[in-house]
Image (tube, rainbow, N blue to C red; front, side, top):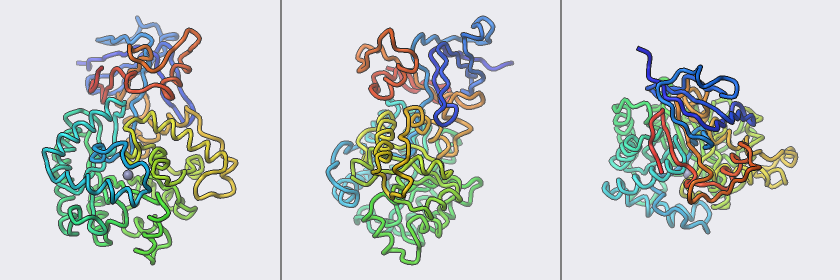
Length: 445
Ligand SMILES: [Zn+2]
């Protein structure tokens, strides 16, 4: 028997290629019972009566958009979101992050905080999120459970730290590796395609060579390898520290590479100050950059030149970097990506090279592409999510600009693209009435 098809009617907008949006004023997306997209129709060309479906959900003039992919967020840091934005990275870590993360030794505290965090990300339209947990095994398992219960598509990693952390957060190398293996086994035993374990060394200064080698081994035991996420070249003091710790390596990226941690499923947050050699290494190993502009502004870290990285063939996704970035909203990541690109265009990019001043700023369509398709590519999910191409899975937002408490006003002169831009720049979670992951509704307001 053929699978039951649910058809969603509305104003469909998604990114086909970088900077190229498809807009269907009267669109219809069909998904089967497994949540796979089976067709996308333009009802101005194909009459509804000729389309096959078992159930029709008519969203009228509401926008149907692909869900956002947040490539970098720290779930435990949700507890102090918005606090400490006056400090640079290393001071911020010691003053706020480490004391707050130590609290996740308490499992019931962890469960309550992680539930709040995941639900908030989903309410903001993030259908796929890559999370750092903390060093704690049980709390990290709880985060994977909560992601699964809420129904989000989650990449999740137990953090590793066996040097330069506070005593409460410092693991022995053996314990760190054994608990990482236990975490990976636990998540894989779920046999749930929506929840993926990620190898998560916090950053080079907090992980010894032995630990990094061991983590690479755990990742590469699998085929394809398990994803690896970390931080790279975020802050100048951090980079100088890495140089001190690994004088034998030519640069920061080389440290990860030497330890086997850069491959086609690796993605690194920030990469602001990566030089040409490092970027070439990211490109040749298939490692993606996760651009987190709110965090980069908030911790006064610098401004990544995104267009140059894309031109060099590096995959780029966007991240909120909660809570070095002060919001769980990927709309904010889109806005700050546009703003950051304008700074680059005005000659204020980091790791400045002569061409920077000639860079054109990123358009809203390009930034939206990075927040959806770009993130999917960075997480090797491009065959599953990012846009509404048939064969992919239906991760979708229903956006109502006329919701009762909407922060946006729309007028008769606003066409679909105007309404889309208003949502991107002025809208918020009050406009996101429904969130679907793999065809299943996971949020409604
Ligand atoms: Zn981070």
